[in-house]
Length: 457
Ligand code: GCO
Image: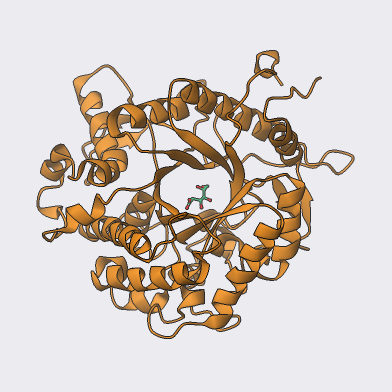
């Protein structure tokens, strides 16, 4: 590693929470066991051509059966918190109506195991796996799904609210809306801009209602927030058109979600830009969406540099590669200072009461060395560079309370299947055997010392 990265005196606040994350469909497997219903991801991945190598999450990391071993590994890594998601169709196979006790029981076992290991659970209610039965009725484009989500949320709070004190409602509404309903790359694989915008509104509404429901049912210890993927956007040139494009991209990816949550309105410039595609918004919706949250979860991976591109019909721009920059396998630019930029901006423009980095990580090709160790030095550098930026932001007053590295283990990476590895723990795809990578060992040492330990020391 480069010498300047070996900072040894950098301390984070005492009670800062260091964790790692994963999600139900990406690791659990057991896709049709113990009464679980199909989700849109079961259907999508079973349709040939949607996922690289036609991989599916049928088995994934088999975490459903191996959760004990996995929690042991998390404890070995000294994780203080673990962020996971609950599979809605495991709890409610039809999306509504009858509860599947066996599904709830899995999460009871997982939560108890985590607590026994001294690891704080952070549960996400929705990380993309809508029950297929609800998709058949229109999915998130149908306003009834909001009510069904609220019912599902109450069942889950009732079951776990005594032991899980950190909750998030919806994970990455931008990706669900546009990745799933406009670009068609993710489940349910639709390509319709109006539907995507309607979905975005319903997701935000579902979020607001789920916050209110938790508050009403409430164990006072519970903290609740939403998780947004936020992306700093920079113009490709000094030209006015590229500047406008960058501002539009920011409106589309960041402000479309931040403004209603924190300021109680959709951004004017985007309402004008989307024109007659703007979704149906009923009286009272915005008030619900802007119900106060306890924290904002930020998933940060990269920035985008964009140029005006009028033939792109929804937003009129396209991202361009940056010469000289390093890229991950996903083709995302490595840009640690973007994390600082986004955190400072949140503090200045939106004042969230608290922030967690709910995801940050990278996929690089992981190769074992001659002794069989997975020597993922690039991942260590990536994390260390991002931790430094988080630290800078804390020093400037950003109320950052914790950091979840994505991901705890190699997992099903959505449309890329198993071809992309993000884990601190390596998963052998043939045997499903786990092996802690060098980054995992580095993170363990970092958490224990709460400061950077240069590897060379
Ligand atoms: C999410 C993300 C993760 C991805 C990660 C790497 O839903 O929060 O999409 O599931 O695995 O962002 O691409």
